[in-house]
Length: 260
Image (cartoon, rainbow, N blue to C red; front, side):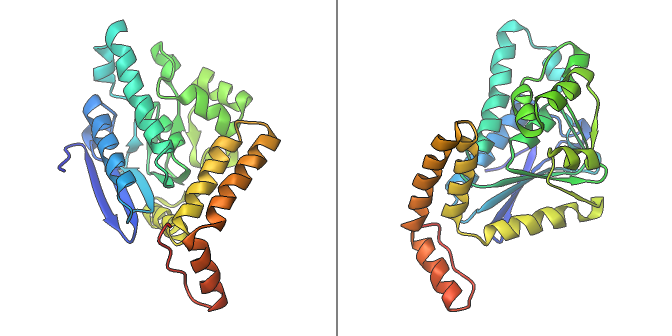
């Protein structure tokens, strides 16, 4: 399928989705959101893809936010559907069943920051700037920012950045736990793909179950989380990948996982 606002490729079990609206700083309009969701659907169904890397085209922006021109036209009637489309896109990322890495090459503001927070991991360029400046425009984050930011960095720090609109540079993002790794701009994709490759070498079913255990277990009490972990671990214990992993370990070779 052809796309106008995104680029999509697959190599070595790793898919790369690039938001490609550099003149608009890769802002998210309705069409771009639809195209991203379409790619996510392809990734979910493609068993050859084990990790998805999401980035932005150009050197200035990952995704600078939702499209201001489009937002300015919205009223009460249209706004809800526009916001729900963004929510659904980010939920598609979270529930992809495969790990996602945001390679943040520049500005990740508003909807762009919210998209990045929906990813499993975040690798930031030294030039990256993240933030949720929506209050300065008279609105609040609408793609999940008020919910995901405190879950990632804590309620107090999240309220600080939400209410002040202060930007978060790359080093601070790593310090806060908002990002996992910082890289030089020219090494960003290399570093992100290296992380993706490391994850792609693991058993796909075990990766999926680990993500599920963390995502759903951290929202409940410890005992319930442990029971959930036991159930998910039992799925992996009964898998063909477990047999292959142990056989490869004993035979001193690389495992050939199939996600079964």
